[in-house]
Image (cartoon, rainbow over all chains, first blue to last red):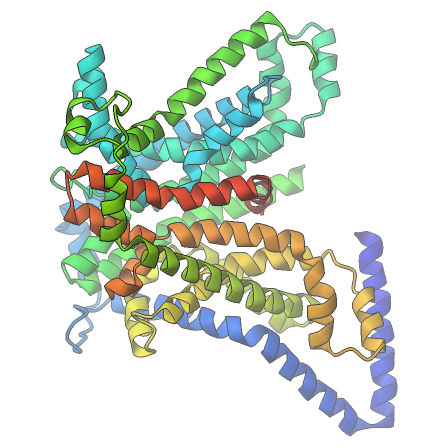
Length: 322
Length: 275
């Protein structure tokens, strides 16, 4: 890396020397080259920058404006209403506050379970098992399928599959109407997302576990450490960076949950499982209150951005320490 | 320690296999019931089908307009991947090789925008897209995927290109090759490993995406697989025989893709997550 950057420096200085000689010989040639460079830059960077501006930047900034208006998406008239939307959301919109609390609770439960199970699976399939490659595939497979289809698959499992298992085994847990009750429907969404996410997280933990040097484990064994002590004092500290990555990955994806929420419960029964993303969607595209929906979307953005900023500063700090 | 297969390992193996089967149970229920007549789904949900009822698939295939929606999904996914790879690799290359402040600023904007959740901009996006005539068109959707995917894709290319020595390119320039030629003939082939990772990550995202196409594509002729499955479920609630067959047909392309690309997918996720 170091020698590489040194090389680059030598090259740039060589290039500069070249430029200088050129500048001496002809100023107009230099101008031409500058123009050509700018043209090339625009040719290479322009297309994607244009799409990005149109699709991400313009909607993002106009969205901030709309959050302070009474825009309904249909009529052309957009009136500035100041902080009214935010006042309404925080004082009168009980559903939004409920969704916020529910999403926070869901995020906490989902990150703990997804990471614990993902790590457990990674430990399992890094043992000397004969079936470990097949098992990795099996545990990972749900992750391929998008949240929408997964939600529908589990809708069938909860409605028909569980009822049938309950009939056969008489285990009360399976005899419940899972999607008909606010509490079990919440856990239904958790089950779907853990089933989907654990395999993904497992892949990252496997990579981390395989980087733990075998010699360290051997040495600990010779010193008389048992399995638990090895896991606690050698493996865990060495995979800590992967844990950080996975925690933040699952936090962001859980907080933004939408597809599985829509297809499994659609927020029901009686909006009791409506998470934030679905709440924003309904406000804008079902109730046609775009201004209020956009104000909610702005709050949503601020929370996600805060999580990401904490993540970046935290991992930067870790990098410096290690 | 690693080489011994002991009795303990055997017990762990049995436990692991049981867990693996438990993971597959939902697939078992969906696939086995998709092959039963409706009455059997209701009365014998857990049993294997007595006779294989392929009629469910025939009906669902027609009602979903499967060939059409599959083609739509394929076109959207492939076209989006092509534009993402072409334009983002070019941009990332130029941003790495042009050592100026503006390159850094543009790169930081792309990276920073990665934290914007889709739900935060979807409402004004539909208005902007309407103004520019991007709604209800596959090409409009592809341009949107270029916009939304650019942050991550440029980020991954940028990191990879920084590791490529510049000497090769300089030699080619001295030999009279243009910058454009240098990029496509020399640099782009070197990007193959990261391109594979990028294509896999973007394909899974775009193929499975529901919310964006549901807002953009209103015309039934343009529906992708997730959109068609969604409206199918709305239309045939509780008609599990058709719904399950439709679900299985939605999953099959993903399974084929997975088994064809398994190694690359695992590698892609590992390298994609450690950004």
